[in-house]
Image 1: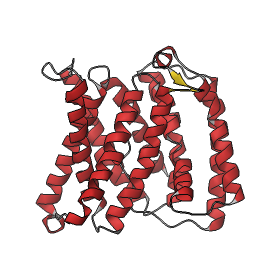
Image 2: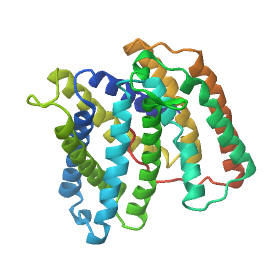
Image 3: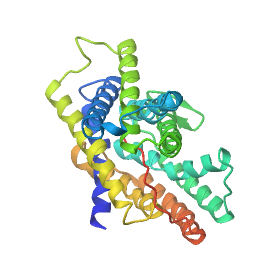
Image 4: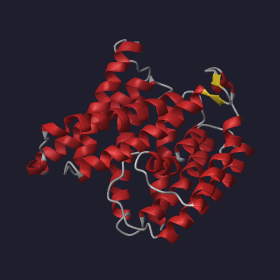
Length: 309
């Protein structure tokens, strides 16, 4: 059990480290350089030590490209751009609604049925999100809004949607394409990182690169690669051998609390009552939803999970 909390504490640190790094670089370059380097290192390891599995079928090229676009490029670009305007814990909180979004994807795309209790859980969870969405900081108001939501909030919601769709594409790569999760993630990171770097070249100023403090930038980049791409990915896979995927998903709701703690300590972010009020609502919805999952017997472990952050 301690390793489960360690995992989500490490996931939470990704948001804090990312926000620190963004003080010294631009979001597209930050995403591109980190993901391209991580993907290159993973593919190099695959080539050197698992050469027999280092093969790509031409029929799967478009699937892998889509994986890079949605799982890496769009997910992380939306998320990192948001971190310039939202607190780390608010970004993490909205992003942590992925289980709800995954259920809706399954309902609309995969035609999976949802029970009445699951719909109740989903509804309570989304309503519980309202207090933190309606509380906006000064930086957040700078980017404007659409109806009740700021563009920053809509951006992180888009990141969560792209992430969930990325899970579906990753499962296709593994189950239909026969690629290992390590190989599929390595290819997607390299592709998504390359796209982000091209985006950076088009819209960000390079003199010679968009970095104002190179040592701190490199420190944050290497920490993110080590924590998110290497440690968390492998630790999650190991924990799924001991705990069910349902339990792991439910335990993931501790991530915003760790992020709030780190944000308060490292970034001096103020955690107000909307965060705790929303936490109660979303946790209630999640509890109802996952209790129904347990009742229906959805306890099979999953071996595939996309990298976070």
